[in-house]
Length: 88
Image (tube, rainbow, N blue to C red; front, side, top):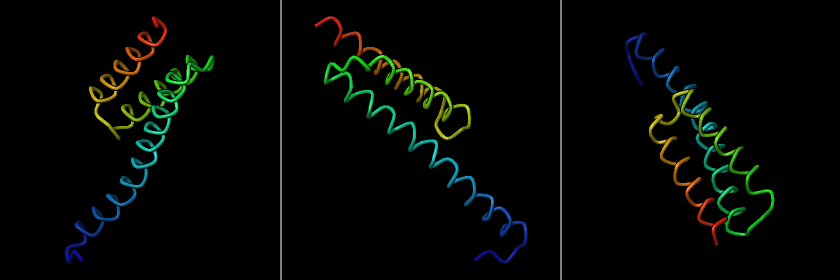
């Protein structure tokens, strides 16, 4: 445990931020997973699932839970997978 008051406060802040970021990252991962499963199953709701995954990734990046380039890379891969499935 920290002895200095500012270090104790920083630790409390880190716990709050970590919990908040975990929620955004988890929501993004879940949305991407649902979109991938929807694409693979040729579900007619796949475009909507991809859209919701994009929203979740953008929100996580905007909040700083993931890096902006990380979100862009995941969106690109997801869109590429969707286009490939439509071409087949």
